[in-house]
Amino acid sequence: MKVEVSAEEIEELYRRLVEDAKAGGYHINPDMGNTMPLVEGLVTNTKRYGYGLCPCRLTGGSSEADLDIICPCDYRDPDLDEYDTCF
Amino acid sequence: MPDFKCLEQVEGSKKDHDLVLYALSTCGWCKKARSFLGDNDIAYRFVYVDLLEGDERDEVFNEVKKLNPQRTFPTLVIDDEDVVVGFNDSTYGEKLL
Image 1: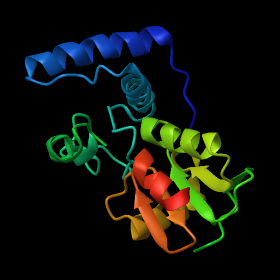
Image 2: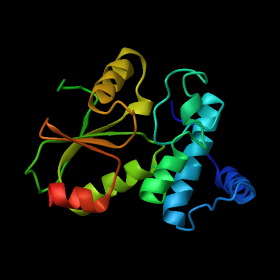
Image 3: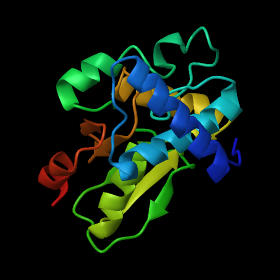
């Protein structure tokens, strides 16, 4: 299912993510070439599924099945430790 | 590996390997993987698994789960035997260039 995403929606979520990350002691990757496609993917998935499913993981079919892969997902900290970024 | 009809052929002058890229349309790392292959003129087949529907989606997703139980993307299959999970340009470079 394809969904349309506007630049305003991406910008709005980006601003919220920056604030949330700061509040939690994290930083959003300043490399916009990495960050903005992920933010766009999160907006798409939120419209598509109703929650911010990780843009790089496939839904298991329900929010219950996807609990571990809703952003920020259970794999964020291990990924940060291993790769300095989430995968 | 099943020969899924949904796989789209991308042309390139380098055809040293049979490459199948399982990707998501929402995934920035998948975009980078496709850019790497395109920039290096490498031929490959790919599918955006999240845009599939019904049985086809289930069949492809089950194949990805077999290849990569963590169900992360991109998942690249090289010559039907080597599976590369995620995108890293140095890993792709070592394997493909």
